[in-house]
Image (cartoon, rainbow over all chains, first blue to last red; front, side, top):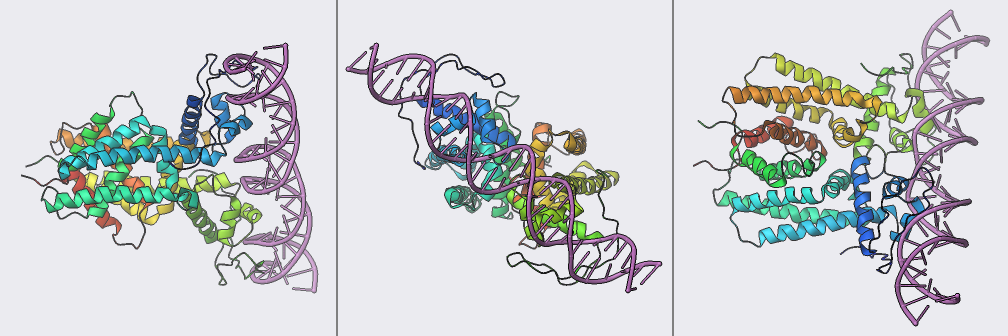
Length: 225
Length: 225
DNA sequence: CTCCTTCCCTAACAATTGTTTGGTAGGTTA
DNA sequence: TAACCTACCAAACAATTGTTAGGGAAGGAG
């Protein structure tokens, strides 16, 4: 819901094969509607951002990956920064709605944690690139006014996690001798940083990874006496 | 160990107060021997790298933080990249020696894990900036030949962790129903990513954080029946 | 056919980047 | 004192950066 889009009035025109200037590569010869083009380009940009880092990514690399020239990107987007903005905002919007759904379900503390963790890994499965970018760039983007919403989102998520943990301790479902803030950080970090090694379609799906991690953090890896 | 240093022939000359050109800031009026100057500058560079990211950090920012002009850095270092190189190599060298000491102690699996985790948090306490840089930049630095040793180090560390976990499973100290590779990733990520929020001299020291995390991952956060 | 819109290209721009070259103040050594 | 070294400054360099302006090909609408 953030940022005014310079939407190039959605149409139904087609794209064609352009006279590829030797070195560059065309991706599609087939046609496709315009509104999807924007998301297509954002997905491409997100992949490059995630792989190389935002600052290290030049608009020429993005354009190259998208099969066009640097200047052409500015028909769709205001700036390189607004691409990043839209990627992160979209991701956070979706994540927030998923978390809200979990919290509104009225589950117990343990089940809520399980659901939050599972939804997080699912989000990584869907938007791996966006999560990786968020993980890497968020700390210093947060200092810029434009990305202030990153801090706002983080506070909201923190409240959800901490509240659930506290509820669990009060209900004697979780141990009372652990520092809740530290536990929150451990869980949050482990979940999100997984975006850096997770590969969709790999050996483990998001639910399986969530199950394993939940088993680890809830029951521990030590054998019980 | 790595990279030939353009060491400006260690001497014992002193530095003086320079004519500060208005905007820039001097750090020291006192004198100090030269060999330390290099480490001083590297520490400064590491802080800026960690805070802003390597690519986003200009040599002018580093120079500014060090109280000198951009070109002057090239008296001490070959390039911006070689600063990064030396920071990471130094960190990895020290970490490796600490890990080796732990592994050579002949502890049981559980105690080895405890020691590795504790040493890792201690390393964060000592070289927070270097760890943060390693965490952020390692994935795509690894693709450059110059930083190939990052992959080598990672493999060595992975072997240490996985070997210990396997030993623990064989000795029935750790649960056999968990995926060992996943567990390793969870632990590794949680430990290293802590460098992004840890502040030396803060509420919890490295040993306390290690204790809390070990308690979480070994025993779990759920209350036992 | 003509007009219009969509989507891209070509070509350039100013700013910023890492780096180099030559100089120089101040201390040490002879 | 004279020669010398250390550690910096001043000023510039070429390359790369994000971004802009104008043009043009293709297809739909009339």
